[in-house]
Length: 327
Image (tube, rainbow, N blue to C red):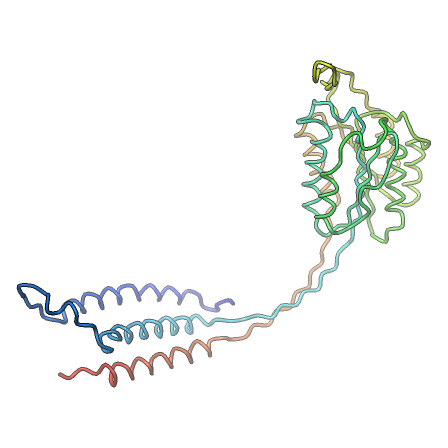
């Protein structure tokens, strides 16, 4: 419901002084009488006339309010939208090897990656998004879907140690390609995040990148980890002990993967830079909308005017018939 002339609604403020005037007038209407006590009047119940005394004024206020609404011209509209979208399918390929537990990102690399990627997913409700995880092996955690509630639940359940330890980047990329290659979307994207170098699996990362290029899949690669050494938790007989280990990311291969497929390589050294990277990818891969809108407005004042007329007639009948006062 909209109003063609909404400024008329300010006239409703005039009802406030009308209420004040009525209250003051009502107090002066009846003369006062001083008596020694009111014991004789305590059991006198008010009659119907006394109960209805203020009803005509209330009806008049409601009628005036509705008349103001009529002046503001309430309108309803029927809108029709045709939305054309350029579909984007995205597969996230996430390294879950034990090195992702290093705490150069907070609380650790894996949890930071999950948090930032979850916000990325939530901000793209119209895209098909899937999830692949890898360490020494790779499997599909969630196929391409628009049910992002299910996707996020599966995403949050990821833990390091779900599969044998290692870093099979080529296998993780190849698995993601197999999930997206048959997509009919105009844009097919893989976001591959890892903190190491390929040391497991039967597929070389560059070979996987060439396969992605063949199927028109663009790959954005992210190397996660600080430069130099990072604190890594080791479980010992005396509890968790931390040791600084070298950060070894095969940036050369990750850059080559991105270059072959038309993507970009990014280095995330802390939580803020990782967030910034996903924001950049989000801008590069925005879904395009072409909206054609048609709107037809209809006047809806008749019902308000009819109710106002009925209230005025009812107020007139009460005031001059039921509550009529003799001079």
